[in-house]
Image 1 (cartoon, rainbow over the protein chains, first blue to last red):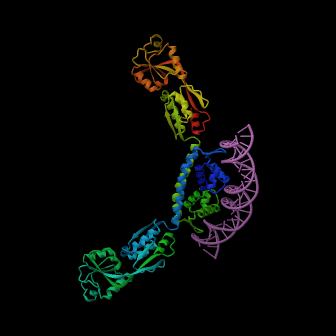
Image 2: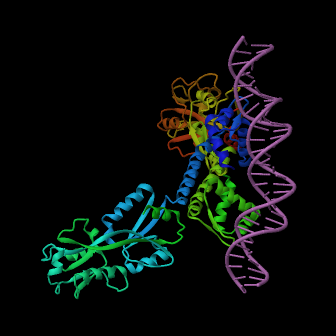
Image 3: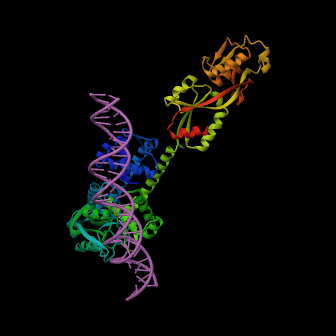
Length: 285
Length: 285
DNA sequence: ATTAATTAATGCGCAAATCGCATTAATCAT
DNA sequence: ATGATTAATGCGATTTGCGCATTAATTAAT
């Protein structure tokens, strides 16, 4: 049984005229006639009552006309969907990202994704920096935006952009400008910073900033999540150093003081990624 | 696209082994390999990732395996049902019958029908005798059980059985035996009889019965429906003459007095009936 | 009643597809 | 390094499918 036979049958069942139907199907009357004969033989069914003059459906033929048509449509819809899977315009992509980009860069990116690939589902996760590589390699994540410079043979890496660091201080804090950091004494100030593990690029960059202003933070809270950090700053619990993009949403009670120090953002993915969907998404970045 | 290709694909998608699958499908490995290739080419899809050593599904292949299988099953179920329609084990038959056979003969017959053809639906109607032929010819009815002897060129007729007439009298009526009909005077008795149109066999037969007992009913109610007639008799509104089978259900308040007069039952259907279902049902009678 | 027109089936020849056999090439296990 | 496994492929034989032309049946028209 061929899909062609079935579609021919359905068309003929509607037209009830061999010659006209064969013309519409871009074939000859003889071919159509024999296709239908073959179908009837194979199924052991008489689909049409034919005279030399008229063609009409049998009861069984009527039934099959009604019930095959939606099936064939479904069949075609299914293969069409499979084709979308294959060319990567359908599926799910898991992305991990630092909290700071969720205000501007990530939404911009996601709106481009859903514009180009409306059927694609994106799973967003914020991972700690030390899990990023592992989750990519284990296929738990597909794409990682990261502030950190990882070097791994299995991963590809590109720098996405650069932005400046900013101090985040409470609105009421006596430090209000960048100059205040140079002049004022900061010995008693608490700092709220991400986990400080030497050898990791992000921590190193923050240290550079602090060092430039002669800050040696002795007391601080520790958090890797921008939203948490800023909430603590707003409550006057300390000063933090964050990417300036963390200031995009209005954060009540927090003053951002931009520094000239720069912070890159990287994106990582598996080398030789085979999934066409993920390849497509990466091309969008 | 062939149904064979699809079933081959599904089997291979389960086995993930060309040689074994081809063996199960009673064909050769080369044939199967090329079938799958042809399918992939036609659809523009890569269904399997093959190495010389291993076969595994692509994402698109996985999707199609999951979604094609139920479709194919439905397709087969559909043709199977169509085959039932063709051989007449599925469909609807409209039957008209006199009320009196609905107690014994008709239920017996219907239980044989639903035993042999469990999927067949039967529509039961009680028509007046003068509509029976018309409705058969107009395809409003398919089979007619009738007490009447119609002669029509387009119809076939067989006698189904013969039963006796019986008088139906109220329980309290002074007439209690057949002898009472010979001896008692019945001049003032009301009779409840079907429409009395001369020339119709059933009416004639009843007249014969009445004549034999020297009854000349002058006053009577008229009804063609057994259940109505008996209800009137039970209320003491008159005497009736009915087929003895009308006594099968317990009819409170009615006494049946069997006579030796016989009454045939006929069955009618269209000559050269084409519908295989109706032909099958008629064969059951 | 005869003729013409319509229309589905069919015989025939050719082209294309399919199949099975045997072989090849890649991969895995030992 | 060797042998075993396994999917792809070249090749020849067969089958299938198509188009053309014709046939046969039926309807419409004269």
